[in-house]
Structures are given as C-alpha cells and as structure tokens.
Amino acid sequence: MMIAIQSSAFFWLGLIGLLAFLAVLPTLIALIRGADDIGYIILINLICCATVLAWPVAVFAAMRWPISHPRSPGSSRKPGYRPPLGGSRSNLRGRGPNA
Image (cartoon, rainbow, N blue to C red; front, side, top):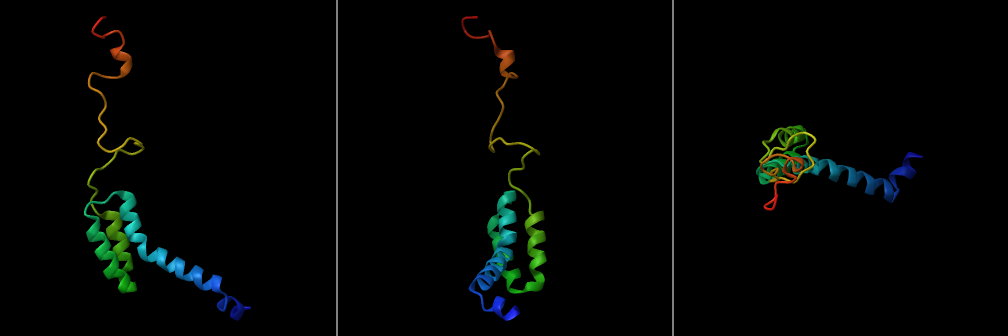
C-alpha cells in the first residue's frame, strides 16, 4: 500500500504543493497584514527557508513586522477614508444653501 502511494503522481504533487505553500507562508502573512517594507520580509523568508530550522524566525518576523497603515479592528473601510466633517448625514439634513 505504501509503495503504491509513493509512486502516485498525486502524492508527489500534493507534497511539493504543501512544501511550496509552507515556504511562502511568511510572505503571505506579511502581505495579508499589510506589513511595511515587504521586501525585507521576502528577503528574510528566502534566507530562512534555505535553512529549515530558521523558518519559524521568518514566520515570527512576518507576524511582528510593523504595519505601515494600521486599521481599527473590524474596519472594512479602505485605507485613507475619512468620515465627513460636521458629524453624520442625519445631522446635516435641512442645512443646504436654500434651507
């Protein structure tokens, strides 16, 4: 049974895909977090993946690297969004130029 699995192309493609995903995981974490200076994270990822024992260092660096534009938790607004001045829209009703 084990020899049949080892000779299967799906087994080897799955194993290579899993290892490739784990290799780029620190870079993906940094991209999702929006880390500042992503080039340094990629460099750390390349160096640390060459030495498998230092791979956790790359994951830790990706999770702890400073973020350039921090967002409030639960915010779905785009970066750079500023709410209108003067309060909410409900406060502005009836205050047009003709009111």
